[in-house]
Length: 299
Image 1 (cartoon, rainbow, N blue to C red):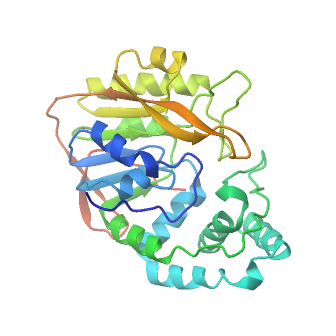
Image 2: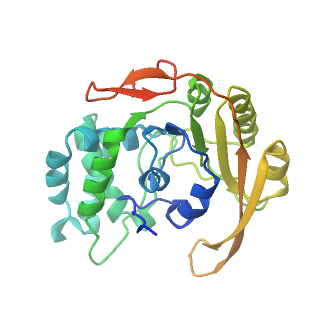
């Protein structure tokens, strides 16, 4: 078995520990589409000919595009932020303020990586005004993920990155393709709340809409896999899919000290249709075969 590759970002809800189970659910196709790519663990640990990777977080997508197009320069500049003098609360708060004030995509991407590795628990959180507000993490020596950055940059040559609403993206995909959806999960209890790392929240209406879009994709010859908590609600939402449930070890308290088994649900909307492909161009202007309609410019 090949060694799994870790993402270079810390990420709440990351799928590194579940990639083997997820891979068993994913049908073969010339293209894998991820509407909620996050840190990209599924992308990094699968082997599709092409990828279309989307996220509503523009800072995340800008970072990925820079790694794809100018990795050497970016990694060298990012390394300069991982020094002892930058690992102090005053420095962190200064860099966080610089990030929130900046409109330069290159500078924001460098600082996004810095904030991810130096902030508390690797959280990615914005307030209602779109300002990053994660507190300082107080780590002894934050890890600079150079090897992981280079691995991502190399794998990114097979990908196209876009930043758009999941609804619009899923309506524009054409077969043959397989879609893996890792949306913000439904709460396990009435007192729990959805985690929103971008300015946009993902509510129960979105959960139902995603299930409807998966059914629509299936009818157009596109297979879709959705992962979520295994609850009465998700089983109802995904009642037209083939369901697989597994037990996952996960922190079940805010402090992370209490761990327990949580049921993870995979919903597979499988299709065996034989559709056609279209052509798009990636950021290096090389034609790549992907199965979507024309995608708007990224943010």
